[in-house]
Amino acid sequence: MTLSPRFAPRRRLAILMVLIVAIEFAGTTSARESPPRQPTAHVQGTARIAMNADGPDVLVELSAPAVTLVGFEHAPATADERETLRLARENLKAGDGMIRFNTNADCRLIESRVDAQLSDRRRTSTRGQDPGTAEPAHLTARYRFRCDRPDRLDSAALGLFMGFPVLQRVLVHYVTNDGQGEAELTPVNPIMSFVPLSGVRIDEDRGGGLSAGPDAPIR
Image (spheres, one colour):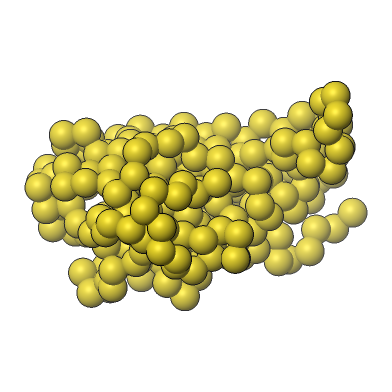
């Protein structure tokens, strides 16, 4: 079986060519004050990122359905699938290509961990649960960045879309020294500013976008 080119992760070189030079001119994306939460990703075409700044360190956790990143969620069975998964793992491991912070914060990647193990086990339903609603297989990555000027950390750009062409949006929850917020990024808007706003949330039920709401969480 030959995978469709739209699912094949692009090579690492393409990812590292992200247009980070525009980051200082980023417009403010959706954001709101909210408590931290673990990222989950259940919708095909959607990934989630949780970002937590702790002093000079910034911890980033990325989670996405395997079918979005590689086009399948079982253990690779063909040479094409094995190569696709290998490229996905290589791309995800390049954390400084997946996310870049504004240059005057002087952040660098110091740790990268990727979980891209897919099982041969078929998804099974729990009692009373439709098999089609069972938890999908995920690919996850965890990064640690260290910033020499954390007080200047105010924005970030994603290179994730360049490496995974099926990916349509990334929902971000972030905690910085200045507050907390959420943002929705897309291939045409991959840059966010960390400007917490009150009373705004991402309306996932309506396919994205903003809606008013005091404390409604991203589900």
